[in-house]
Image (cartoon, rainbow, N blue to C red; front, side, top):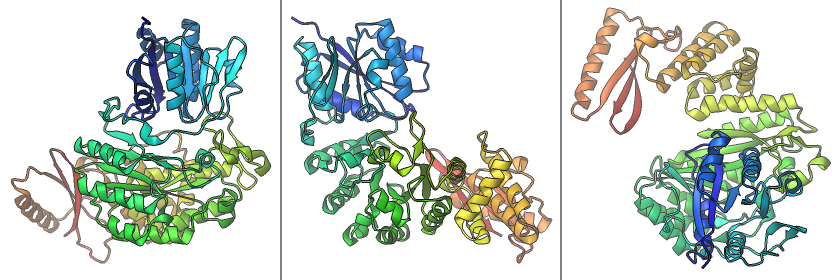
Length: 570
């Protein structure tokens, strides 16, 4: 009787909190016939762990096979680990799979002699067939979507159509999915109906969905266990309006406390779906919506078909009529778009007032159509992962770096829920959000503030410095007060840790008003398990028309609840 072959399926995450979905799916399919592929184990690490620690952990389990899931974020660390494993245990079989090794393999084989096999694209069926052959000591040759290293060279298996998704057992109900990290990834479909040239999904225009029965069973399993966050990885969740509406309704009927993240096409939302989404409770849904560019010529070049006016109209409806958190995306470095046009795109999207605007530099991913046309279009990119755009005929490197810095400023302020009123006021004074961010970026760069991360207090102090230098007199003073007010709304402040931009001196009448108000407030929350701390300050420039006005910020905390900030004018 053959002893069971020991296979470790592993990957290196960018953060520990990230749970793998690929590895549990692979195990679920390979173990459909228990033992047919030997013993299977999932082991997950991060790119930040010392290589020798990961090497020791893997080898301590005495594996016969180690299979790595490779992405742009872990390619370098994974290949270094592959080399170390091969040197340490030359007979160990090593398999690579994932998007990072599926399309450009020619440089991997000669430089990494430890690689035994590479699986292209969807991996469940090829891995199951390969492990089955190795477990039973059968010849492994011409396995679909698999390249094998042999004594005679490389054995390249043929391409093959992917499986019907319901053939894949649920990794959740089999108990092979780690659901202890605060959130899980989940997929209801694979493929994408669109052909956006920057995305590898353009290579697979066919969309396959799990059956509604299977999806509902999995979703119910997750919701009953009150998984805090469920992130749907479907490329376009609502590619089928009726299907999406059915699943939205199912979640609304059964959800207890989970938060759902979806990538959607906003232009695909119809009236029935928009009306249904008005029922979504607060903090239950987040939609990520790719705008990418507002320039028609650029959208044509990248073959992105999403009517911008309809997208904007539906985003406005979502923002005005629902409680869904909206995360919108723009891409910097797309062909045909210069610096001024990217800034114009920022203004157009920020006019919608999304909760989050992400400006990501273009990445020329292996296999993506845009990478294949990069030379023709004059797109220069970093040859190392994540293949970030470095220059285009319309954008020099310095322009792209300025846009990256603007994106960082957005993350520090607007996207983090901080400095909303200040940025809105700056936009009015500068002629738009993009112009305001451009001026702020210039200040941040000249002061060397991008070099090191800033604590929240330091960030707001620098914002006050910026408005003080950029705007004189009353306007500068008023903007400084707005920055201080935004700070008080973002963090629990006390008189002992106030920056100099706050005015905390109160006369006796103002102090009495504050004391009377706090006494009444404490009476209102008595017996509710809520702790109250407060800050009373003046904003002379902001409240110039009400000279004696005092603003009180109440910080309400309690066991199991997030801090709530309430602002009152006395």
